Image (cartoon, rainbow, N blue to C red; front, side, top):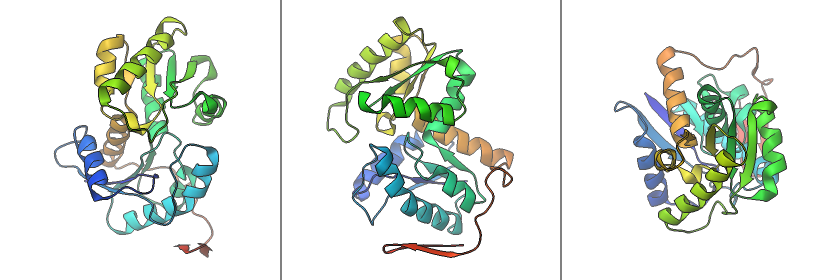
Length: 244
């Protein structure tokens, strides 16, 4: 099976993309092919609703191209799931969001869960976003910001320590039965944090790949009753074009 992972952050070179693909392969089946693409027409790193909105057109364009190139599923490598609904309208193959996959998994594993996001500034938005994903507000123990910008350069061990401190507060002060890492930049840290905190720590990167593989194996995709195809039209913005 072939999964195309759309990374919404621009500016990644070939080495950066390869590094992220290698991280994802650790979660994938041996027969799963993973490719990653990122925007080439903007300078965005998704850290706001504005960034997500501006990024969505090129994300939809890349997703549509991935389907045409034979991808069996498209994954959105971001906890904001930018362009999620637009991609589901456009595509027939499964479209899975990092936040969507993580929240669904957390709901299976615990009666209450918390999310660790990169900044306290976005806590109100993230709470609303979780509700939009279908999370029961009564099961959201908390959303906490660890004040770690998504593009910051730090040693992995330092990031794990920061996340452990935040996760411990979620468990001990907020009553969380599970913790979601609310940024795909934390990929690969879930298992270690699970061992440290003693509760399931959901790595959205792992949840993303597992959800996509499950849908492919089952031959399932999103309902076109829920995400009907948009009216046929040639749409354009700036230098980008989406045609269906």
